[in-house]
Image (cartoon, rainbow, N blue to C red; front, side):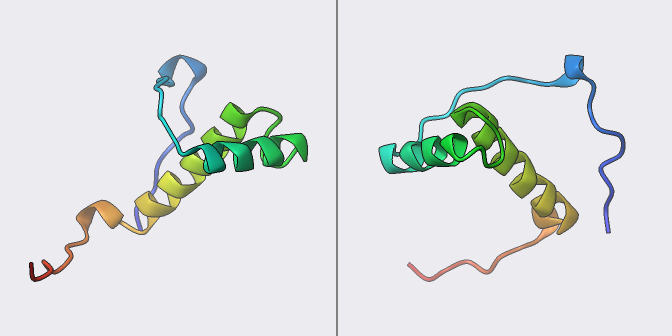
Length: 71
């Protein structure tokens, strides 16, 4: 199993912007209002994204191959 190493320093973070469907944003708002995973939509989304990317990294997802589907 791969390891990520030390957590990044504040200076090593990279900001970027994504566009998501309205219903997803409204769900992030609900989670933020419930104080789940963060207090703002951005904090909640960041938590979810980082958690999912960490899981993909641990699963070695980037090295997996998938069969091609017939078109």
